[in-house]
Image (cartoon, rainbow, N blue to C red; front, side, top):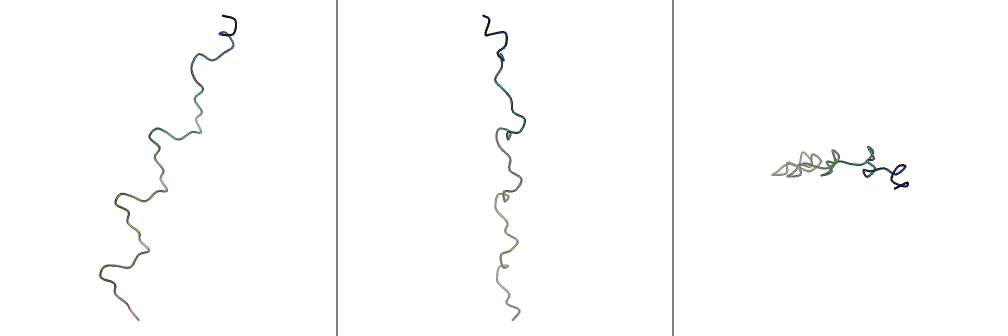
Length: 46
């Protein structure tokens, strides 16, 4: 019972970890909308 005094009852909760589920704001939306892709239909200006 002695070790239970200086030991955390609850698991450590690091605040530097991503939430669950993880929500990365650097990921493309769904469906992905690439703004570097040519339009459809492609319009060549040259």
